[in-house]
Length: 453
Image (cartoon, rainbow, N blue to C red):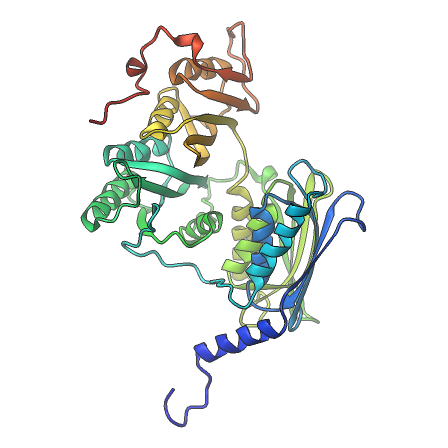
């Protein structure tokens, strides 16, 4: 700071905020008595920008469902109440889980927490020691995930975890990859540049109007949050004039101004689903809006959310263009994770090239992946794919049977609607155990085992 300059530096502001939080540590009270069908989590803390997202993110990451929420942070103090259940709709009874919830929230809101409100910038080469994070955005098309996976396999990269979202003709993915030989992060600058170049070529395809991006980044941002940021930056919320076919299924989002209090009131009505609260709060935060009051209710098939917001500069939504942008961005945030299509759950021993082989089989049978969750746990690949046929229709049982015959030694659970073909096979089971059915066929001939010598 120059001599005579009395304006505080960003560092001093940050230290003052940390001092306030140390003097007023967050208080978390968990109550299992006052509500008959949910565990009540009350959070009191010194207020700061992004605090609501931090709490919602912790609850989401602990696989809790928020049934109701009451939000109040008008002033220097944050006071929220969340009625939560487990995935089965039951109260949280285990003492260890209750302590875990309280502990994680306190750590997240503590003086040493490191919430970064702005969208993180990608860097050229900054892999972690365990894996390298690759971020991809581009135009969606049938077979895209198969092509990306094939390129990574050819470059001797093993995909250990990945999330893939598609929305409004755009696709985004965050992939954690390791080197095939060492099982560690890829660190060679030249090799990383080659990976980025080849993947960017795949993502570009034949589209000359919309670009594609690849980045090798530090794995420090929450994956779901990063995907929202990437698709927001890619403007997936902009609908074309041709996109009018799903008006009846679109979320009902309104934004009106309450002039007496200088708030903008955002109201959302849509079909309820897991992580809905996270998706909307994440988007408002990344658009630099502050939620001062709010009410959330999901007691039924439809979710209701109401937020009283201002921009971070203190102003409400002050133009029709801004109002429309808030509506479009919230609609997109809700739609990105909608679980339409047939759900396929795959669990098998992990190996290099598995994702490439499975998605190739999908592509060869005319399926397109609209969302995917890929993870590796204890040497097991646990993958979930939401698929449709190339025309966007549901998958028929005949096609599903062909996939069963091609994939091999795998356990595949099929969930959702399967269209019956005109001449359906005698059996159309919802769970297939592969192994003894096709022992006579060579796995090498099926393309599921390769030599990487």
